[in-house]
Image 1 (cartoon, rainbow, N blue to C red):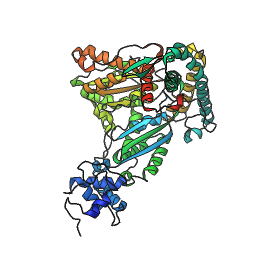
Image 2 (image 1 turned 180 degrees about the vertical axis):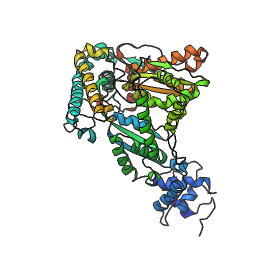
Image 3 (image 1 turned 45 degrees about the horizontal axis):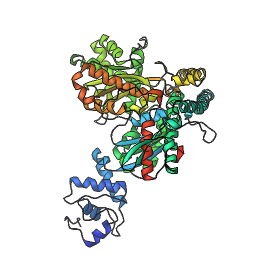
Image 4 (image 1 turned 90 degrees about the horizontal axis):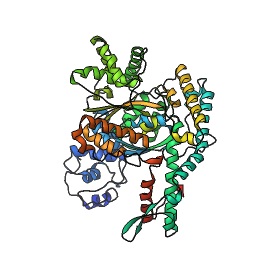
Length: 554
């Protein structure tokens, strides 16, 4: 018997539905206590059922006793998503997952997936890595590296890096305490109907003293973290939380399975195992993309050959590229090459321009590969064509913070050691310059050893946070305004603030009439590298108002 098609719920249906919706009588309501696959299947019925969600759930996806019919929900999802290929339905189920103790390199690979997932990761700007866990420092030990004959060297270098990091924690915090003594640090508090900035001598009670202590300690700690993270390696472990839909996770698993990095392949299986408890049907089709893997292998070999005798030319930290319409195909091919070399876009374009048309077409066809279906999609280089495009060279630390923006196209090159590095002035001030220089030397030696051993992907683990990496960003004007105004705020890291300030200046030099779009870019250079003092002063007031304090810095 077909389900009854009417919007009138029976008394029994209404009673059952009270367990699953916030308001049975409302036209706008929230859903609760239903399997994500049942929710996805019921929402998918909106496009074809004449009744609403409540009626569909009650009559199609609940058992007679009112319990959810998870099997029926999964069967419908399987039919629509996996057999009919309706990917939009795969976006109707959402799952939160936690991914812990993966490398910082892996967090960037995960976060390359831009659409359908919202990640948050452990921040090296606020979290100290000076404590061992289970007798070991917090870095990944990839099984192929440990079995390669370089395992002992890898551990020795990583241990040296983390031991040096730990040794700098207290001296660096003491340096910032001298720059900003506690009695010169004010917090915001409410005095009557006004907000006042108050120094320690004027604090009224124990709660205000506690709020000041927490805000001050966090400010000093984060200032120290910003500096000493310069020697953390890409192998440093981090925790990542993601809320994503089924389509996002399916694409993420497929991407990780296609990576050459062993850590990525292992993680793909772990993510699948975790999500099989929540949205198994939505990720059922996730598999290694042989088409993409073949392209990657061929493009890498061709680019290695093409640029073998091309020295990497020096380039400014930020370059605003010029794109002429008549150069479209040359620039497109250059965009295809970009992730496989360490050269700037401008240098790549010159090399491509010197090639014959036949050679350019060869690279184009290599990048496209042998497509067998519409699911063999081309790579991100085909997004070339934005009106605004930058090449940026900065530390991996800064890249981590700026990668998170998604309303644009980013391509990065492999992490390496060929573009150089920087050491903050504060390192010399605490007397650690020589040992930090040794950290970079040891890391670079390990990087080269791993590459010579055929572990090109894993060699990236040995790159440090202040080793330079090059990436390309294409965007429209609206995104440039949002990006630069957000990332030049006082609380931002001084280095990525400088990158974004330069982006704004270069664009406005070319298009001064667009100044209203970038009006709130902060060009100030704040002294002493203590950028979070003002933010934490405001946080103290919020803590006092709510009575909720972060005990970590108490």
